[in-house]
Amino acid sequence: MSVITVCGLTRDYGSNKGIFDINFSIEKGEVFGFLGPNGAGKTTTIRHLMGFLKPQQGSCTVSGLDCRENAAEIQKNLGYIPGEIALFDDMSGIQYLRFMQEYRGIDCTKRMNGIIERFELDPNLKIKKMSKGMKQKIAIAAAFMHDPDILILDEPTSGLDPLMQNRFIELIKEEKQRGKTVLMSSHMFEEVEKTCDRIGIIKDGRMVADDGTEALKARYTKSYTVTLGDKAEAAAFARDFHGTVKDGSPNEVVVTAKQTLEEIFLHYYGEEESL
Image (cartoon, rainbow, N blue to C red; front, side, top):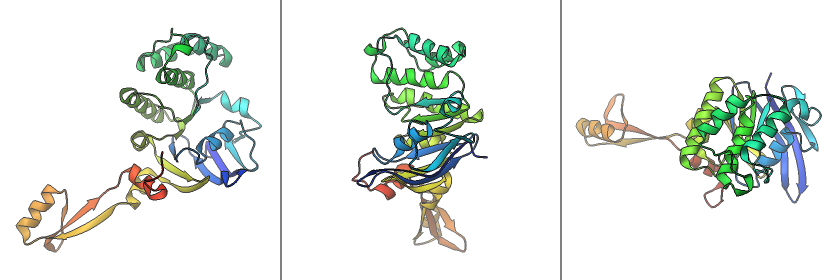
């Protein structure tokens, strides 16, 4: 049984805004990348999964439980990073994290301290004095510190510098090896390519792609045959351009051009659209 299932999920805000007949599922131990520009419907879908919104049509479940009716039970074993971080400004970082521990009724001090150290966070600073990146680190610690089996992450590295983004990628890889199930909405193509088993692309509230990361990239791989003057030229060309001399045609070289995930994304959206 899939850990996360979205079936025919629809919420129509009018004027072609909202999400329409969204379908996907995520298996145990799978990291699912959810891609689309701002306003495409990623956060609306995630809010349904968190139980914040009631579907107009369709359904969504986590571990077989209805996301709206069983939100409290689901969230006991779930880590969530919202797209817009809202913390208690008058608390310090450590006060907020201890509050979250008490709220959950779990002592996870050791793991919390490990995440604080990993992301070089000063938790004693008042939240209202923190930068966006520091608040993001607090949100990461709050989502991961109770060691949940399921993670729903909406733009989890927003505001982080490249070093901290790389540390987050390593954290996701570790969680994946431990069998965690992850839905990650992101604008960072590198982190999606490095961590996700499967990718869903949403456009104007509708799913336009849902495939394995490598399968999606293979679909947009192009091969070209280049004819050279003789066998020696072909061998040199193949060496310099990472090509392959064609079987039975020693003066022909096949060159494969692989597209990046960002280039594939632009096939669906066009370069003029902002992420």
